[in-house]
Image 1 (cartoon, helix red, strand yellow):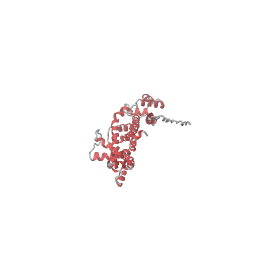
Image 2 (image 1 turned 180 degrees about the vertical axis):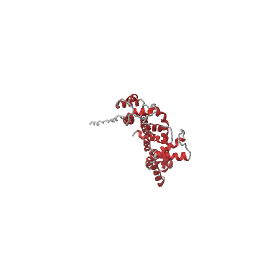
Image 3 (image 1 turned 180 degrees about the horizontal axis):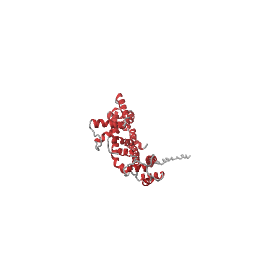
Image 4 (image 1 turned 90 degrees about the vertical axis):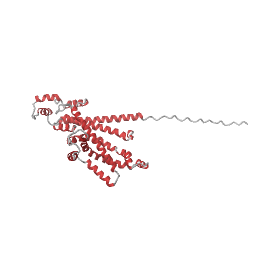
Length: 343
């Protein structure tokens, strides 16, 4: 009897499916970055356009005839003018054209960097501003640096130290934030320049002449920055990374400087973007108190003489500085906190 063995079925292993690499996210991130950058640029251009439009219509719609005003300033006599006397002025500055045409010429000149002619100085507005803008920029950045130094030292030294000390520091910050710049400038001038003679009373271009104006603008801003950073600083002291740093043997001051401070300055940086425009405007006050060169004296003279092109030029410049400052704030975010790059 023949026995047939059952045929053995060979089971071949099923080939593993091909691994398809996930699509790279790099192009998507690049497109997102380009999109955000484009939106920021469009937003910046919109702010500058809005400021320019506002100043143009304020200039065009103020009561009184601009040609009569210019001719009276030129001759030094305030009187009514005939149409024949006003015709050359209207033709020179385009006042005889319709308001939309004047607006179009204004925007066209703005794109070329032409802000018009000063009614008082008979010079291009760009030249008038360019001659005096550097001292104002130096004062603005100096005041911002002073504010950050004061706010940072005050925060590190007082937050969570002792109950009474922290409360006293918070009260001092609130008081400093409410100080009027003009009043503070006069007090500093009387005490440190006239009383102690430690700084020049008026004028000057050296470092010592910059100290009191920078403190005048920086102390109130330091109060705002301190209030903004304090709550974030106190919250960061309770985070797990702070406990980890302490367990590694790091001292309290090192923890505050190397870890806590970095996580608490982002709100202050946001405030700094707004503060740049405010400081640039506030520089007008400090420059007039301390008789410093800069746009302050130029702007006050232009307002008193109704030199509207110069006033418009300064307003547009402030808008440009505000826009640039906020773009720099966005860049600072990614430098301080790399997680913002992928947010």
